Image 1 (tube, helix red, strand yellow):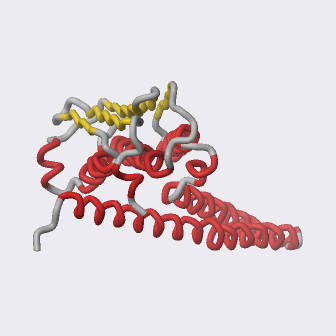
Image 2 (cartoon, helix red, strand yellow):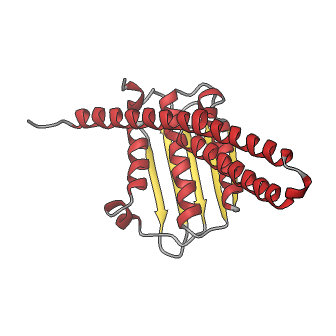
Image 3 (cartoon, helix red, strand yellow):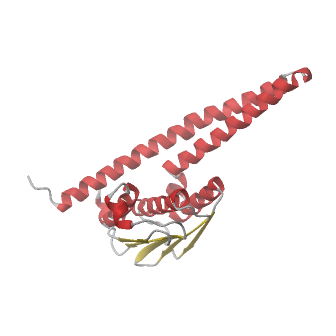
Length: 229
């Protein structure tokens, strides 16, 4: 039995939706369960340190240090939860979610991640907004973690007809064809998300010359991605 391109697209959309639902569930569990339990543990440790007598200064100091480490762990879990499923995307839109993500990466990785936006319309379809955000997330993360850069520039622009995303860095670069045919699952995933949304993705890079990623997704129609249930 021959599988048509349309059937493959439907399968891919359903796989992406299932993956996103799983990420959302894990993010909620991290934030609502593990994060809250660690926060309570931190408060208990602080109370214990305060309850110790002055003669137990060394024990109190160690408990406070443990409290600080626990609090740092709780913050890391919250950051991981936001990366898995950014709640700002649901409530505030793709611009706010993208800006918050770039700020978070800059703080955690101690790099300069600039984000600008212009003309992005409100009320983008949820699937389209999620696709744009995931592409930006993957591109910025790759630049920071693999390109050896101290500065990344991201821009999100919109009009009545399309959304345009651009992410640039001056890092070590890579061979695009080799990455797409080798272990570059992140690149393949970005390209597939944009394609299913009816758009185009262009990645320009070469070793030693940095990387430029440009995505264009039309708004004239809802795009294939929004047709999946």
